[in-house]
Image (cartoon, rainbow, N blue to C red):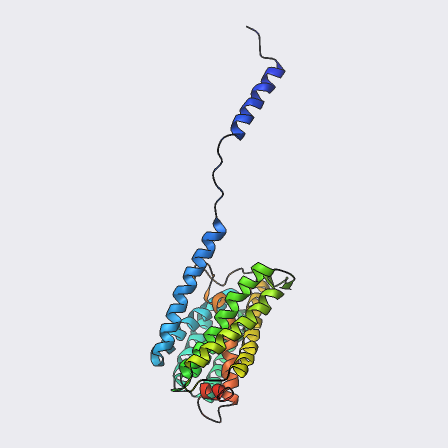
Length: 307
């Protein structure tokens, strides 16, 4: 019996390869669509919780943001590394406990003093090998996340309107920045720090967020408000929020971390989700404080836009 020739073997290999190529291939997985679905679902749940907390106000609104600030504190201190992690978190948590009642009752100066003292104490506890500057910054950052929205919501007349305006600006800017960047594209905003963000997305998001926030505030504020000053105030808040987003991305790059944690499906951690909100809320609270004449922060904010 003769052995098969090389040509026969080659022909058999070609037939096998052809048959294999004709076999039906499985459809590619739509991982990006699935990830977007998870991201959107998580965002809806968080937004609903934030809206319910804002509507209830008072103690429970403070509890909502106390929980968010505690998680942000934990993520930050883990992210930067260094020694004495438990001690650093404990001092940061004690700072939140002190800040919370001051902010709840609209005590602006005491809230600021407690944040400053807590940041100094956290840095001191960290020691030389615990990255004291970064530790102090994280303590102040998480305390600001608690104090700013609670101070705004404390106003009996304008508290809810100020929070809804802030949500409208930040959420609108975030959503339309994503949509604008995907549909328009173009040059990157800061490629080294956040390669996914574009100038087109930032511009679309800024103006869309400002417009949405203005409409929401006009509907929510007692006696209404003027669109033009609200819109320009929203533009400023949206820009500050995007700077806050980029700053948080820069911190993660500095410590070679992609996400601050995996607490929120599709978003990463609390810091990843609230980076723009922290910056915009602090901006709004400071503007309101500057115009409050010793009164409520949110009332000072709306004095600028009243009819």
